[in-house]
Each structure stands twice: as structure tokens, then as C-alpha cells.
Image (cartoon, rainbow, N blue to C red; front, top):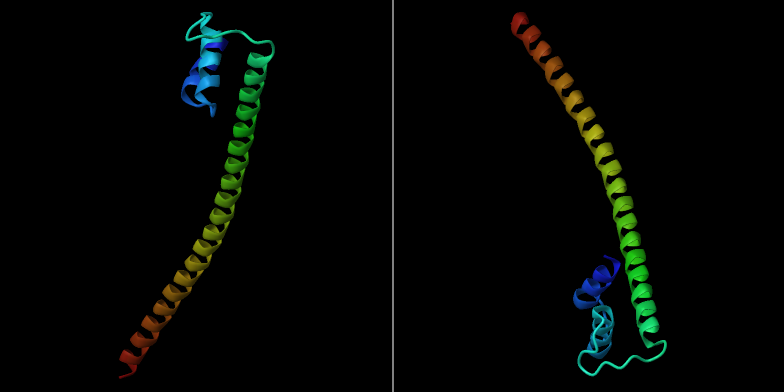
Length: 111
């Protein structure tokens, strides 16, 4: 399962030169494929590079997500404040309309 995950990642997402990608895939397949000759430490280095890239990608994605969450919360707080302000204005205007209606009725009775 772990080897399959690394193999899938190497085939689809890894930012590796084609030669390195082929070496990793051949190593994970257990075959000699396309002139593969094991070299001491090379595979370990490639896997370490892949691990480092995955860690960096995760860190970048986490940072971007946290930034997006913070921006969302700030926007929601501002919009909530705006809605409350507008609601207060609407209530004030409705009160004013009611008062004017009463005044108008009183004037009509005075005539």
C-alpha cells in the first residue's frame, strides 16, 4: 500500500526529471526495466527529495488554508457589523415612517 502510494505520486504529481521518475518506478516495481542499474544511495536520495517536496507542499497548502480561514473570518465579521448597522437604519426609518403617518393623521383630523 505505501509503495503503491509512492508509485502513484511519482507517476502523477512528483516534480522529478523523467530519468529520476523512471528509476523510482523501476525500483518500486522490483524490475530491472529500461536499463535500470541500482546505485548506492541514489534511490534513498530521490525518496528523500520526494518526501521533502511533499512536506513543503503540505506546509504551503496549510499556510494558504489558514490564511483563507483568517480572511473569511474577517470578512464575515465586517459583513455582520454591516448587517447590524443596516438593520438599525431600517428600524429607524420604519419608526420615522410610523411617526410621520401619525402626524399626517393628526393634521387630517385638524382640517
